[in-house]
Amino acid sequence: MNKLLGNAPRHPGLWLDEVRDADYDWHHAPIACMPTKTQGRQELIHLSAQLAQLSQQGRWLVLINPPSIGYKQMLANAGVRMDRVLLVHAKDEVETLWAMEKALTSGTSSAVITWTQSLDARDNRRLQIVAKSARAMGIVLEDVNSHLHGDVRIEQGSLFGQQSFFSAVH
Image (cartoon, rainbow, N blue to C red; front, side, top):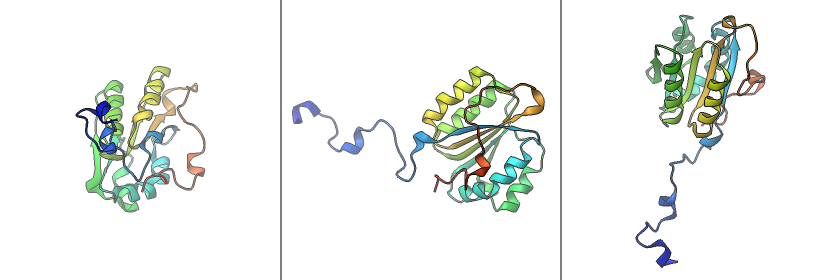
């Protein structure tokens, strides 16, 4: 066995290719696509209590392209630490998805919320691939007023019927 290891580090913890947080299995972080008719106002109200908890952990809450819906006041009223909110203003859809991908996989964010128009099948597939290495919870709020037909969603269902969407993160 010693000859097989050669000069490799002896501690098994050093053999892992990726850093993992003991409190959370980052490889099962979902990215949810939610259609919205209120520019994400209702969804943000439902998520604000969980976002407040996440903001206390010291990681970033990343908001990408938020519209002017009074989100700052909603989050502040819910007890979110506003010094842990990072705003990203992307110039187009490509940059928006790139920013979301980087925020989800960086390990410095606990939640990433993105406002966008409708996603096509290619963008949905890209997010499915990102979800495999995501280290934060991701939410894509799609403006349903921008399209009339239903696209394939990464994850659909009644997320608000759950006790807490972010209950796995502590």
